Length: 281
Length: 130
View 1 (cartoon, rainbow over the protein chains, first blue to last red):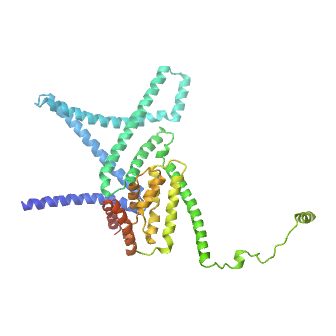
View 2: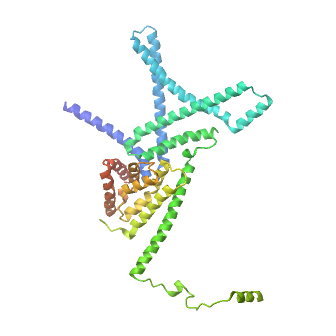
View 3: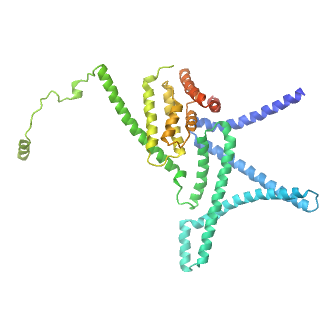
């Protein structure tokens, strides 16, 4: 009995060690974050983990779906099962398979169809159209097709980001990541998706909320405001400090520093005479 | 209580006031990600403040930032993000660690349990540095 408990504890300990090893591997990126080099290493690590997890996820879902299909076909050939079971399993499997097919299909569709909407392609299309003008029905069908593709691509991208964010949230919260850092990663994923669309000329430019340059510009603007405030406040503080010091003890600046011409007596000058002198010269 | 070195508390206060002034007077739209980006910019200021024995009032600062951002972010979220930017105790002297402890104590009293989360970060940081 005692042996079993010890064995169980050692197994738990080993599992914890594995977990710790995994987290500490990830934490290398976090340590760099503390040193001010947050994102690049963390991003690459996350990207690596995600790739692996995605592969595993897709494979398991496909295996499940294939297994369920085989099962249902065997059942159809004469295996005795309850009617409910036969109905439930294939429907669930087909749902997950449908989801995977939808996501993959949407990406494939976006990838294959996107160049058609590029400006160059649009130009080429319009040239073709000059030769053979399309009917109203063809145009509307094309537009509807394009809209449908954009919708599918958007939903696929959203689901991909949501899935990735869920994975990150589940695995990285243990490391004590801040909500802001999680948001950063989420934003990074969205940007990655958006950038791939941009590359495919699907988007002419990234929206400001996704554009790192726009965010940096905002930060620089706020920093400029901050510096302006600091300069003003510092001047005021220096002046008030000087006033305080004067009250305590007058500051004895050397005369030449204060005004090197203070010893020279001022002379009253008649402007008309000055003008005459100037003209004579 | 250690004496503040070189009146750095005044310098720090001006800088933080400047940031909140910048946020509140920014003509464009201030998003949460921009506020977090600003908080990340504060890491070096926090380190300098602690090195000069300044006990930073994180809660007050977070409240001020939240108000400047028109309550776009909850002060607690900003406070925790700020704590994440505090320097690693491994790189601080004994005296500076005491100052850091005072800073953290205030936050922990307001948001208990927050420290455990960050202790893990630091612990990992120390292990990696070793």
